[in-house]
Length: 162
Image (cartoon, rainbow, N blue to C red):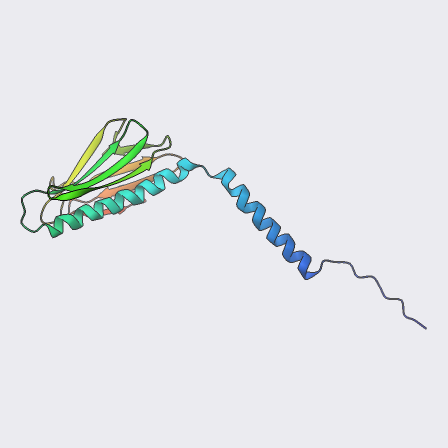
């Protein structure tokens, strides 16, 4: 006498893995629908500004007793770019640019429009020459804040700069 076998229903391990892989592929493609270029523009520009500020401070520390200072120029160009330029008299300027993608940049509360710029200067002690603290905001779909301390450090802050 044969015992009737019950038919088993369910998914095999291969079927489950294939579904997970397909969901992963679809979610990767759909992620681009929820993020835009301007969401990253401020984030990347913030990192580039911090790097440029740290480079300017290092140039200032390396200049010893030379009278000219290391400078960082922050500007908004007419073709919707943020440009950060580190310079010193006897060095080739280092220029970094980032597409603004419709976001805005403000320095010490003043929004930079096309053609506007602001310059920060480090002295031979690697501190800011004007002895003041400054803040830069990148405002797009997200806001990013960069602080310049009077002692010359440049850093990101989630709260208001001192």
